[in-house]
Length: 336
Image 1 (tube, helix red, strand yellow):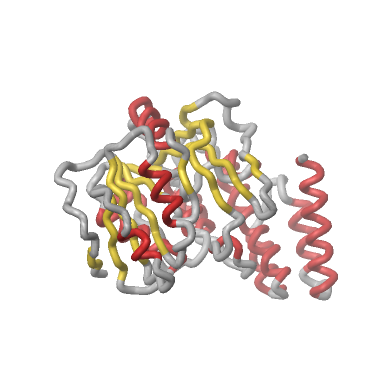
Image 2: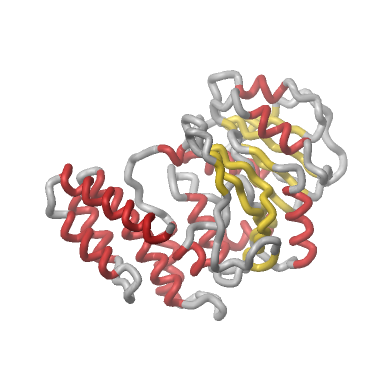
């Protein structure tokens, strides 16, 4: 894949400590906010690689208005494929630093994000990824910060005690707008899956966690704007998560690190199968939902949910969707 650089700015002569990769596709309203948040960092030894993925709304021209020589605009020849994964991969190839940071064009960083990352990098040099906590803004203006009972209370930074237990019970502490990955890690685990529209970022975090420890800071370093229209994560279409194959492969080959409990990896794979089954039921794909549920041979955590959802695959669509909504509300009320 060829890339062309259209930046009018002079080349930065020294090798930076951090390369910031921003995939860009039709985010002219938000790219300025993202870039401003990078330029406002308390740590300044970085380059910014904006990968224009065939934008048609003037996003690229908005980047060209910046005169900071650390910013480089790269154009990708193939338009907006794979939900930004191919653009991220091109950014990795263009990166000159040993650390590659990622930021979505519609999100932003708080000023001390990179400073916190580099502090962890110095303390935990063998980690495969470094990330800070994030503040989420939902439609309607609700703001909240995910908390994880499996991670020590704030203020804290260190190696996540059990990544797979955390994502199994509480959700993923790693996010595509807050994570920073040493470039050498991609040589070991591979790049983002360019042929996958959704779930490719989760697959990347999983592949890293199957090989390296992951460092986390409870200091909020990212603001995730879920209220923005056009985000890939807003798509209601069912999907099969690529991460399932990565987990299945690691379990079959027996390549789990000794410190990673096998039961947590098995149950996380089951959880993902159940999520996929739920989406399939919602879309009326009952046969596909049953395939996922048969593959979710739980050791106990999701046994009742699996049985209930299997029954729903034989229920008419409208009633099945109603039952799924009731089940989700009940789960939320129990965890609240």
